[in-house]
Image 1 (cartoon, rainbow, N blue to C red):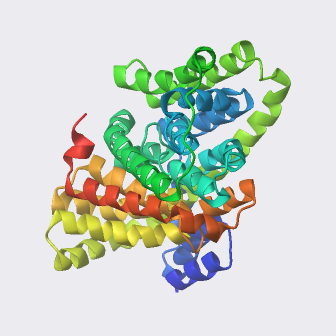
Image 2 (image 1 turned 45 degrees about the horizontal axis):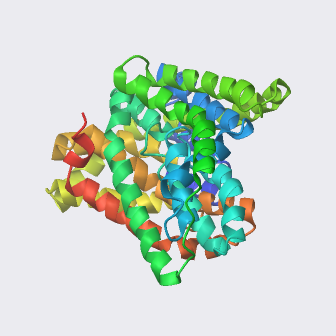
Length: 419
């Protein structure tokens, strides 16, 4: 009945945090082991009792400050210098700007919302179809969980008890690989659809875009540079990035007003509160899963199916794509890591870093796949384009994502080469 209660609550559109917390309570009440009620509050608190999780609201704050302070538009102009003259130039600009934002925000949903408002109207004005523009923007959001920093990487590092900084480093090569495949998709579509040839900015514009864009470009340098050099932890880097975004938006671009800060902090607190509540509820649900020895049962079943690490990873990808379609990525991560990570490490000798990158990318793909597809609805609400229309234009990018997942599953060195 516990699983039945979980499904009933889930399909009745109860918030996922309440689904997990109430299902755990149902299990305790029906198991007859009432002493577990005493541990319930401890497990709720223990799931969020980690210094590393502080990076999540700080990265959210950085994204809010960047958007309000005009940093996002300057990064887009900086991307024009790099790729603006190619055929379908705005499509490349969109993707490069998304790569820059992925190195700052760490949240796919937030990135899709911000970049949809910034890029889709501009692309439609230059003759691109709205669904294609929204599809590129949504696909760019898939870079957020693997190009560091990443909120999912922060959470996975806490769950797997591995250094978050090393988890970030493990995502660099996979992020570049997936970006390359997206560039190829855009090039092929540009040739088939005969999108207009872009225009390179003239010398004066290049100088203007470069001078105005470099301060915004300092944000990813602060985050990634601090982590790679060991001068700052991921949490400290997130705090420094928030401070840098505030100072640049206020004193260099002058778009950010101190009067905006209460609303920015309110939005950050609401969004971070939802995520932290979800982590807490999923933590207590994961505790029930472990108490029931589900990981051991799953390990025994999987061992009967295959002994090949690559086949195991493909099985994980297939299952998690289905999971990601109906459950939020953060909640799903907390549910599956305690079950599958011990199997991956003990039964198949798979690195936690390889497993983490593949799992995080697979789960976030669910943002853009029906029936739930929260990313599709975010993109639709920002642009007014029907979700299924975006999804059809998104299919080549999802195929490129699947190719990335297969390559990462087959070749661990793609993840581990910089560690």
